[in-house]
Image (cartoon, rainbow, N blue to C red; front, side, top):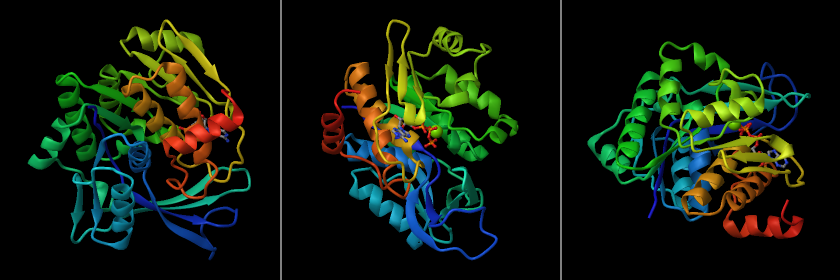
Length: 314
Ligand code: ATP
Ligand code: MG
């Protein structure tokens, strides 16, 4: 049996209900919603009934417990979430601008998950997992990077697999040691899941086909490219697949890439064909955008089957 691990930030997200530029005035808000890219990812894995765990830290506060309760309720092993008695759980305030871009106020670095160190129990948890998913957003602090690299080494070293969603804020690349850390992760990656320009972060090539060939040449087994409402593609050297997006009403795009990735990895590890894994992932990303709140649109397999049946095999 496979077990999927991820490591990184746990946050609550608090969303402005009207559009506008940032938070320099009082605005109506909804939340707290459980959030953090690795948390959204692992919640979607758990909802599909796949064994999984997350290593992170929260404060002993309501924002922490809203996350732990949601993840545990959706089937995630939360034994690797340390509750820091004097800590404060991370948060992100989000307001959509008229043009659809997002203004954020974050508290991550100075929150409970600003440091993640591995206890002996957590090393045991890592060794019980067969796959680790690396989220680029989680590479925000040296101790977190070190913990992720340890998990990658141990899981890969015992015959497991690695997936990597760069999900990068470009300024992260300028942090000392970051490019080296990313190269290390990439050199161990079996499944690479970029969106948009992220495909070119680690390639010299300037067009998509050449960048795919270059990355597959480095030993990556498969690449899945996310294309928002346009759908997604899959490449493994032998097979190329392009699926159009499902037609849905987009309410809140946050979390689509994370739910998509979780669903692809789950089906891929369970031995589904690439086209089935891509179709379920595409449906999962589409359903994710139809609900306000980053984790609220995570899907069960039944919900994915229903969307696929309704719209035919896109
Ligand atoms: P994120 O903002 O979460 O990091 P991302 O850039 O990693 O997102 P996207 O390409 O935006 O990922 O979305 C992931 C997948 O979700 C897409 O490949 C597609 O399958 C699905 N998806 C996203 N937006 C829509 C939409 N508006 N309609 C249908 N499907 C969508
Ligand atoms: Mg993304």
